Length: 204
Image (cartoon, rainbow, N blue to C red; front, side, top):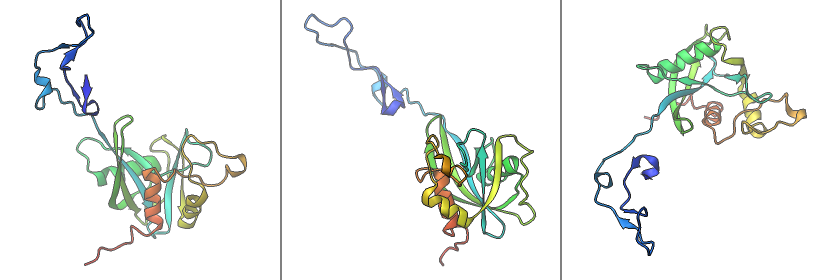
């Protein structure tokens, strides 16, 4: 039987098979799986980067739209780390592959486990290089669209435009920018950007 939230399987101490007439369970012999680290199973975890990319002048945010997204729904870019790749390298590579934008500075912000299927979302904030802000979707067909939004547009969307992925969008609001809800790390990265996280300097 499974214990420890499925991370370990053990033989139970009793067994109803072949029970006495009274219906009492039979005791089973001791088993190594009930002691120590026997039969431990560590689930696979796939590291994934999710990044809020800021323009070089620090006034706009790059958001992308997947082909299956609801109307007017945009989010931060994301992608899997490749073997032997650092988080910073993955942020730069995935941003360029999906949007054509080149990223220089990268700061790790936060993370969010996403157990279905088996992801660990590593949130980062990156800054585009001055000569690398042109959007080009020709490197990877994953995105349907990508755009630079001003911080004011993102703030407005955070007030009344954050909706869960599967929720219907009213017809009269389909042209407004819609973004992920506050429970999503994408939303928290957007909030950090418009609140000045990338511009913050550590206190001495």
